[in-house]
Structure formats: structure tokens, C-alpha cells
Length: 101
Image (cartoon, rainbow, N blue to C red; front, side, top):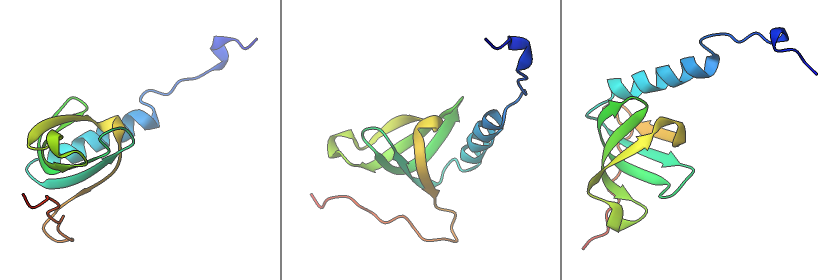
């Protein structure tokens, strides 16, 4: 059986650094429109980043995969984000995907 003294834990770990940089990135993008894809329901969020609280991104969601969940703030855990794109004024714009009602 291995002895715990044989293991060395680096602090901070590469995952800690990655998480902190991702949080910082979202903090710097507050006020911009984003599309965020998650691996869990409701899977996609399109809206404006309102703020970052700890490791949660608060998004004023304009569009998601379920229309009844739109037009409200969502608190998205940064660890749940698989893919994201944030408009920066230079790259492509995120299209409006609302149903015409």
C-alpha cells in the first residue's frame, strides 16, 4: 500500500490556475454578449454577461433551448461550461435566434 508521504501535491495545481484564469477572463468580458454551451440541460445560453460571482457567470439570457427559460438571469457554474464565444466587436456577431412571436 502506498504511503501518503510518497505523494507531492503542488499548490496551486494547473487546474486551479486554469479555473482562476477562466474566471478572470469572464470578469473582463462583463457587459458583452456570449453564447455558452454546457454538457447539462438546458445546454445552450445566449445573452449578456452581467457579472461574475466566485466561479459563477451571471448571464441575462435572451435565448436558450427552452423558450420558457428565457428572459431571466442564469447563474452558470464555470466548471459546467464546455464551449463559449464572447463577442469582442471584431469577430463575428452572435445571431438573434428568437422565434418570431
